[in-house]
Amino acid sequence: MTEDTTAGKLITGDGRTHVGSGLMRESLVSAKLIAETDAGEIRPMVPDITMIAIGGSSIMDRGAEAVLPLTDEIAALNREGYKFILGVGGGARSRHTLAIGLDLGLPLGGLARIVGGVEEQNRDMLQFLLAPHGAVTLIKDHFQDLQLFLSRGMIPVCIGQPPYHFWEPPPKDGRLPENGSDVGLFLMAEIVGAPTMVFVKDVDGVYDEDPRKNPNATRFETISAAELLERNLRDLPVEREVLRCLENSRLLTSIVVINGREPKQLRDFLEGKPVGTRIHNRRYAETEG
Image (cartoon, rainbow, N blue to C red; front, side, top):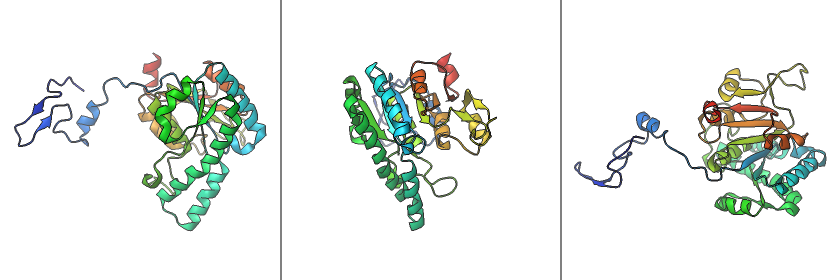
Protein backbone atom coordinates (compact mmCIF):
# COMPACT_ATOMS: atom_id res chain seq x y z
CA MET A 1 0.00 0.00 0.00
CA THR A 2 1.09 3.60 -0.49
CA GLU A 3 2.68 5.38 2.46
CA ASP A 4 0.04 6.65 4.88
CA THR A 5 0.90 9.92 6.64
CA THR A 6 -2.19 9.66 8.86
CA ALA A 7 -1.22 6.30 10.40
CA GLY A 8 -1.95 6.17 14.12
CA LYS A 9 -3.59 9.59 14.23
CA LEU A 10 -7.21 10.19 15.25
CA ILE A 11 -9.27 11.43 12.31
CA THR A 12 -12.65 13.16 12.71
CA GLY A 13 -14.97 15.19 10.52
CA ASP A 14 -17.65 12.75 9.35
CA GLY A 15 -19.40 12.26 12.69
CA ARG A 16 -17.13 9.38 13.63
CA THR A 17 -13.63 9.03 15.06
CA HIS A 18 -11.18 6.90 13.08
CA VAL A 19 -7.70 5.62 13.80
CA GLY A 20 -5.71 6.71 10.77
CA SER A 21 -4.61 3.89 8.45
CA GLY A 22 -4.73 2.87 4.82
CA LEU A 23 -7.90 0.91 5.60
CA MET A 24 -9.73 3.87 7.14
CA ARG A 25 -13.26 4.38 5.74
CA GLU A 26 -12.59 1.61 3.21
CA SER A 27 -14.70 -1.46 2.52
CA LEU A 28 -12.72 -4.66 3.07
CA VAL A 29 -14.40 -6.14 -0.02
CA SER A 30 -13.27 -3.27 -2.26
CA ALA A 31 -11.40 -4.64 -5.29
CA LYS A 32 -9.12 -1.60 -5.31
CA LEU A 33 -8.26 -1.95 -1.63
CA ILE A 34 -7.61 -5.69 -1.91
CA ALA A 35 -5.23 -5.09 -4.82
CA GLU A 36 -3.33 -2.44 -2.85
CA THR A 37 -2.73 -4.77 0.11
CA ASP A 38 -0.77 -7.19 -2.11
CA ALA A 39 2.35 -5.01 -1.77
CA GLY A 40 4.86 -5.11 1.05
CA GLU A 41 7.01 -7.70 2.75
CA ILE A 42 5.58 -10.81 4.39
CA ARG A 43 7.67 -12.08 7.29
CA PRO A 44 8.01 -15.89 7.34
CA MET A 45 7.37 -17.51 10.70
CA VAL A 46 9.87 -20.37 10.22
CA PRO A 47 11.60 -19.71 6.88
CA ASP A 48 14.17 -22.52 7.02
CA ILE A 49 11.74 -25.42 7.27
CA THR A 50 10.41 -28.01 4.81
CA MET A 51 6.90 -29.44 4.87
CA ILE A 52 6.87 -33.15 4.02
CA ALA A 53 3.40 -34.46 3.16
CA ILE A 54 3.23 -38.26 3.30
CA GLY A 55 0.43 -39.89 1.34
CA GLY A 56 -2.13 -41.89 3.30
CA SER A 57 -3.22 -44.33 0.60
CA SER A 58 0.01 -44.15 -1.44
CA ILE A 59 2.42 -44.77 1.46
CA MET A 60 0.79 -45.48 4.84
CA ASP A 61 -1.73 -48.02 3.55
CA ARG A 62 1.11 -50.11 2.09
CA GLY A 63 2.36 -50.99 5.57
CA ALA A 64 5.89 -51.81 6.69
CA GLU A 65 7.18 -52.41 3.17
CA ALA A 66 6.74 -48.74 2.28
CA VAL A 67 6.69 -46.99 5.66
CA LEU A 68 9.77 -48.37 7.43
CA PRO A 69 12.39 -47.54 4.75
CA LEU A 70 10.92 -44.04 4.53
CA THR A 71 10.97 -43.43 8.29
CA ASP A 72 14.56 -44.71 8.43
CA GLU A 73 15.54 -42.11 5.84
CA ILE A 74 13.62 -39.39 7.70
CA ALA A 75 15.40 -40.25 10.96
CA ALA A 76 18.79 -40.08 9.22
CA LEU A 77 17.96 -36.70 7.66
CA ASN A 78 16.89 -35.34 11.05
CA ARG A 79 20.20 -36.42 12.58
CA GLU A 80 21.97 -34.52 9.82
CA GLY A 81 20.23 -31.30 10.87
CA TYR A 82 17.42 -30.94 8.33
CA LYS A 83 14.34 -29.23 9.78
CA PHE A 84 10.92 -30.37 8.65
CA ILE A 85 7.32 -31.01 9.63
CA LEU A 86 5.77 -34.36 8.75
CA GLY A 87 2.11 -34.40 7.76
CA VAL A 88 -0.02 -37.35 6.77
CA GLY A 89 -3.41 -38.13 5.27
CA GLY A 90 -5.94 -40.79 6.22
CA GLY A 91 -5.81 -43.06 3.18
CA ALA A 92 -8.29 -45.92 2.87
CA ARG A 93 -9.80 -45.30 6.30
CA SER A 94 -10.72 -41.75 5.29
CA ARG A 95 -12.39 -43.04 2.16
CA HIS A 96 -14.30 -45.65 4.14
CA THR A 97 -15.40 -43.02 6.66
CA LEU A 98 -16.53 -40.64 3.91
CA ALA A 99 -18.48 -43.45 2.21
CA ILE A 100 -20.38 -44.17 5.43
CA GLY A 101 -20.98 -40.46 6.04
CA LEU A 102 -22.35 -39.99 2.52
CA ASP A 103 -24.59 -43.02 2.94
CA LEU A 104 -25.93 -41.54 6.19
CA GLY A 105 -26.59 -38.20 4.48
CA LEU A 106 -24.25 -36.16 6.67
CA PRO A 107 -23.78 -32.51 5.63
CA LEU A 108 -20.50 -31.35 4.14
CA GLY A 109 -19.19 -29.86 7.39
CA GLY A 110 -19.94 -33.11 9.19
CA LEU A 111 -17.95 -35.06 6.61
CA ALA A 112 -14.98 -32.70 7.01
CA ARG A 113 -15.20 -33.03 10.79
CA ILE A 114 -14.94 -36.83 10.92
CA VAL A 115 -12.10 -37.20 8.41
CA GLY A 116 -9.60 -35.43 10.68
CA GLY A 117 -10.20 -37.97 13.43
CA VAL A 118 -9.35 -40.81 11.07
CA GLU A 119 -6.07 -39.19 10.02
CA GLU A 120 -4.94 -39.09 13.64
CA GLN A 121 -4.38 -42.85 13.45
CA ASN A 122 -1.76 -42.49 10.71
CA ARG A 123 -0.21 -39.53 12.54
CA ASP A 124 0.14 -41.56 15.71
CA MET A 125 1.72 -44.50 13.88
CA LEU A 126 4.32 -42.20 12.34
CA GLN A 127 4.98 -40.55 15.69
CA PHE A 128 5.39 -43.90 17.45
CA LEU A 129 7.83 -45.16 14.79
CA LEU A 130 9.91 -41.97 14.93
CA ALA A 131 9.63 -41.36 18.69
CA PRO A 132 13.15 -42.74 19.36
CA HIS A 133 14.41 -40.06 16.97
CA GLY A 134 12.57 -37.14 18.56
CA ALA A 135 9.15 -37.20 16.91
CA VAL A 136 6.42 -35.25 18.71
CA THR A 137 2.73 -34.84 17.94
CA LEU A 138 1.88 -31.38 16.60
CA ILE A 139 -1.72 -30.26 17.08
CA LYS A 140 -3.11 -26.85 16.23
CA ASP A 141 -3.22 -25.84 19.91
CA HIS A 142 0.60 -26.08 20.00
CA PHE A 143 1.29 -24.61 16.59
CA GLN A 144 3.08 -21.63 18.11
CA ASP A 145 5.47 -24.02 19.87
CA LEU A 146 6.76 -25.18 16.49
CA GLN A 147 10.03 -23.27 16.63
CA LEU A 148 10.69 -24.62 20.12
CA PHE A 149 10.25 -28.20 18.89
CA LEU A 150 12.56 -27.63 15.92
CA SER A 151 15.28 -25.92 17.96
CA ARG A 152 15.40 -29.05 20.14
CA GLY A 153 15.88 -31.33 17.14
CA MET A 154 12.35 -32.75 17.32
CA ILE A 155 10.27 -33.97 14.38
CA PRO A 156 6.74 -32.48 14.53
CA VAL A 157 4.11 -34.84 13.11
CA CYS A 158 0.61 -33.62 12.27
CA ILE A 159 -2.53 -34.52 10.35
CA GLY A 160 -3.33 -32.87 7.06
CA GLN A 161 -7.06 -32.22 7.30
CA PRO A 162 -7.49 -28.44 7.65
CA PRO A 163 -9.49 -27.38 10.73
CA TYR A 164 -12.50 -26.04 8.81
CA HIS A 165 -14.75 -28.69 10.37
CA PHE A 166 -18.33 -27.44 10.15
CA TRP A 167 -17.23 -24.39 8.11
CA GLU A 168 -16.01 -26.39 5.11
CA PRO A 169 -16.78 -24.36 1.92
CA PRO A 170 -19.28 -25.94 -0.50
CA PRO A 171 -17.49 -27.90 -3.26
CA LYS A 172 -17.82 -27.04 -6.93
CA ASP A 173 -18.94 -30.58 -7.81
CA GLY A 174 -20.21 -33.48 -5.75
CA ARG A 175 -20.40 -33.61 -1.95
CA LEU A 176 -16.85 -34.47 -0.89
CA PRO A 177 -14.81 -31.78 0.93
CA GLU A 178 -12.41 -30.15 -1.53
CA ASN A 179 -10.06 -29.08 1.24
CA GLY A 180 -8.45 -32.40 2.09
CA SER A 181 -5.16 -33.33 3.73
CA ASP A 182 -3.01 -32.07 0.83
CA VAL A 183 -4.62 -28.65 1.12
CA GLY A 184 -4.28 -28.56 4.90
CA LEU A 185 -0.55 -29.26 4.77
CA PHE A 186 -0.10 -26.75 1.97
CA LEU A 187 -1.78 -24.07 4.09
CA MET A 188 0.47 -24.89 7.03
CA ALA A 189 3.56 -24.62 4.82
CA GLU A 190 2.35 -21.25 3.55
CA ILE A 191 1.75 -19.80 7.00
CA VAL A 192 5.13 -20.89 8.41
CA GLY A 193 6.86 -19.50 5.33
CA ALA A 194 8.38 -22.67 3.88
CA PRO A 195 9.93 -21.83 0.48
CA THR A 196 8.75 -25.15 -0.92
CA MET A 197 7.15 -28.42 0.17
CA VAL A 198 7.27 -32.01 -0.99
CA PHE A 199 4.40 -34.45 -1.49
CA VAL A 200 5.61 -38.01 -0.91
CA LYS A 201 3.43 -40.26 -3.05
CA ASP A 202 3.90 -43.56 -4.90
CA VAL A 203 4.72 -42.14 -8.35
CA ASP A 204 7.83 -40.38 -9.68
CA GLY A 205 5.93 -37.13 -10.25
CA VAL A 206 3.08 -35.82 -12.37
CA TYR A 207 2.41 -37.44 -15.76
CA ASP A 208 0.19 -36.49 -18.67
CA GLU A 209 -1.47 -39.91 -18.27
CA ASP A 210 -1.52 -42.61 -15.62
CA PRO A 211 1.90 -44.31 -15.97
CA ARG A 212 0.48 -47.54 -14.55
CA LYS A 213 -1.95 -47.76 -17.46
CA ASN A 214 0.23 -46.19 -20.13
CA PRO A 215 3.97 -46.99 -19.87
CA ASN A 216 4.61 -44.31 -22.50
CA ALA A 217 3.14 -41.54 -20.35
CA THR A 218 5.30 -38.42 -20.14
CA ARG A 219 6.46 -37.04 -16.79
CA PHE A 220 6.59 -33.29 -16.33
CA GLU A 221 9.87 -32.13 -14.82
CA THR A 222 8.37 -28.72 -14.11
CA ILE A 223 4.96 -27.25 -14.87
CA SER A 224 2.86 -24.36 -13.64
CA ALA A 225 -0.22 -24.87 -11.49
CA ALA A 226 -2.21 -22.82 -14.00
CA GLU A 227 -1.26 -25.14 -16.86
CA LEU A 228 -2.11 -28.25 -14.84
CA LEU A 229 -5.54 -26.81 -14.01
CA GLU A 230 -6.08 -25.93 -17.66
CA ARG A 231 -5.12 -29.43 -18.79
CA ASN A 232 -7.74 -30.85 -16.39
CA LEU A 233 -6.05 -34.25 -16.29
CA ARG A 234 -8.22 -37.15 -15.23
CA ASP A 235 -5.92 -38.13 -12.36
CA LEU A 236 -3.47 -36.14 -10.28
CA PRO A 237 -1.29 -37.23 -7.33
CA VAL A 238 -2.32 -34.10 -5.38
CA GLU A 239 -5.71 -32.51 -4.74
CA ARG A 240 -6.77 -29.99 -7.39
CA GLU A 241 -7.54 -27.44 -4.72
CA VAL A 242 -3.81 -27.40 -3.90
CA LEU A 243 -3.15 -26.08 -7.40
CA ARG A 244 -5.71 -23.30 -6.92
CA CYS A 245 -4.14 -22.39 -3.56
CA LEU A 246 -0.66 -22.43 -5.09
CA GLU A 247 -1.74 -19.97 -7.77
CA ASN A 248 -2.56 -17.44 -5.02
CA SER A 249 0.13 -18.21 -2.42
CA ARG A 250 2.69 -15.54 -1.48
CA LEU A 251 5.45 -17.40 0.37
CA LEU A 252 5.16 -20.94 -0.97
CA THR A 253 5.98 -20.59 -4.66
CA SER A 254 6.31 -24.25 -5.63
CA ILE A 255 5.63 -27.82 -4.59
CA VAL A 256 7.40 -31.03 -5.60
CA VAL A 257 5.88 -34.49 -6.04
CA ILE A 258 8.26 -37.43 -5.47
CA ASN A 259 8.08 -41.21 -5.04
CA GLY A 260 8.24 -42.29 -1.40
CA ARG A 261 8.72 -45.91 -2.44
CA GLU A 262 12.24 -44.77 -3.26
CA PRO A 263 13.28 -42.97 -0.04
CA LYS A 264 16.47 -41.63 -1.62
CA GLN A 265 14.28 -39.26 -3.62
CA LEU A 266 13.45 -37.44 -0.39
CA ARG A 267 17.16 -36.99 0.35
CA ASP A 268 17.77 -35.80 -3.22
CA PHE A 269 14.99 -33.24 -2.83
CA LEU A 270 16.36 -31.87 0.45
CA GLU A 271 19.85 -31.70 -1.07
CA GLY A 272 18.51 -29.57 -3.91
CA LYS A 273 18.85 -32.17 -6.66
CA PRO A 274 16.27 -32.31 -9.47
CA VAL A 275 13.77 -35.04 -8.69
CA GLY A 276 10.08 -35.72 -9.30
CA THR A 277 7.89 -32.92 -10.68
CA ARG A 278 8.03 -29.31 -9.55
CA ILE A 279 4.72 -27.43 -9.79
CA HIS A 280 5.09 -23.67 -9.48
CA ASN A 281 3.05 -20.49 -9.44
CA ARG A 282 3.58 -17.20 -11.27
CA ARG A 283 5.79 -15.86 -8.46
CA TYR A 284 8.28 -18.73 -8.74
CA ALA A 285 10.28 -17.20 -11.60
CA GLU A 286 10.52 -13.91 -9.67
CA THR A 287 11.88 -15.56 -6.51
CA GLU A 288 14.28 -17.80 -8.41
CA GLY A 289 15.50 -14.95 -10.60
